[in-house]
Amino acid sequence: MSQQYLMAIDAGTGSVRAVIFSLDGEQTGCVQREWEHKEDPRYPGSMDFDWVHNWDLARECVQGVLKETDIDPAQIAAVSTTCMREGIVLYDKDGNEIWACANVDARSDDEVGRLIRMYPGLEEEIYQKSGQTYALGALPRLLWVKDKMPEVYEKTAEIGMFNDWLIRKLTGVEAIEPSNGSTTGIFDLQSRAWDPSIAEKCGLRGDIFPPVAEPGTIIAKVSAKGAADTGLKEGTPVVVGGGDCQLGTIGVGATQPGQAAVFGGSFWQYEFNTANGATDPQCRVRVNCHAVPGVWQYEALAFKPGLVMRWFRDGFCQYEKEKAAVEGTDPYNLMNKEAEKIPAGSYGMVCAFSDIMNFINWKHAAPTFTNFELDPTKFNRYTFYRAILENTALLVKGHMELVKEATGNMPSEIIFAGGASKSPLWSQILADVLGMPVRVPVVKEATALGAAIIAGYGVGLYSSIEEGAKRTVKWDKVFTPNTDNRKVYDDLYETWKKVYAAQLKLVNDGVTKPMWVAPGL
Image 1: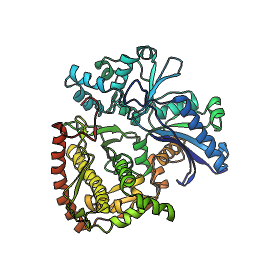
Image 2: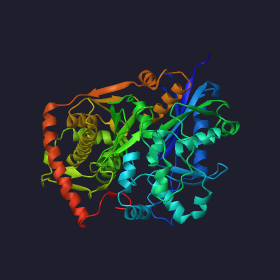
Image 3: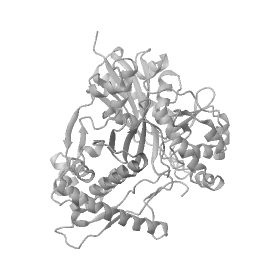
Image 4: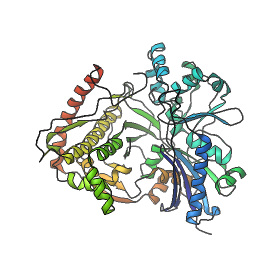
């Protein structure tokens, strides 16, 4: 038998890619295409999803990776899909796309406000059943379509997510899965299925919800049209995948209750696996279905840490950018080298960007640096840079404590993946702040690997999702905490919380502008 491979198609926020893995988790090839989600000038905050152009990009990736690797399509044992969560697609009765928006579409601000005013207490009620609030869910967006595009709303026969949209394009079959479907806010966490009554309580239809299939299910096979579009072999099994963070946790080996992972990119997510879908009585933290059947996840989100890093690099580190271009390295490497010389705690300086998550009343203070002196030998750009690294680690500590309050549990170690985990300095700071080992995998962009694991499990190449993860996930390094630094960070954490509370009060008093605020607040 010729060697077999697994393919993942990953529709991220900023790009789509097709990735081929060996059965041992080695990445054999990857072709990526950037895409953008344009704002409709009529609707501020909108992020339209262009399903025609974006499918062309996705199929180019599949064609490209098959050509690049020179792998016979018959060697692809299975395909699975993953995507940014929260993005939705509406279909008519013939299965044609008629409306779609990307994940952080913010056009429904008015609808959120109206829901809060018209139905006091409903958001809390929905959260306790679904684990979601109005902040990121589909309910306000569907209400927006009903109000602003009634002709589209009337034609809508089904709602789907982008990972399911990819499967529909490959096979002609539609099925939602719980890990991404639960992010709509219209799922019952316990049954891992749609709850149409949630939509109906918001004045929405309850008859647009397609079947549900668990991740790892062979949902269909590549159709003749799907094969013609992509170059895949007709009849190739297509396996139900999941949302990006849920598959990312599989791709770093976090498949069991009690395990936890931190994904550091433009946004940071703390994911803690649980054995049940119980929610937080105070509605502070998100709860989703995991892509592992029978497992759920508490998710605490931090907005923009990676974007803050990019802003600081581009705004203040032109020298490092120019030097890195000459030396053929990453400017962050040069910045990290200098920031390592700054002592833990950045001489007491504190910055505030993202806050500890409060899902039901979610806003962030104005960006702030404070408690520094006019001494350039101590407080230079590398001190400010290190303070940003420390600020994000302190935020993760806050999220771990938040989830512990809600669940009574805390992990014994953290798996750290995503672009930020490429920084040894940031990894060490995270270990020091948390006071626990931080384990970094070889494959730091783990979402596509998680999809490949699911694909292999679906066609029986792995006996379980856990076995697939054990076979494919390799470890790069484990960072152990420095006890002296931890003492510094314990004190800094208490100071940081007080500083942040004061900065948030300035926002609430109308003195400063929030870095981010949830729709309707």
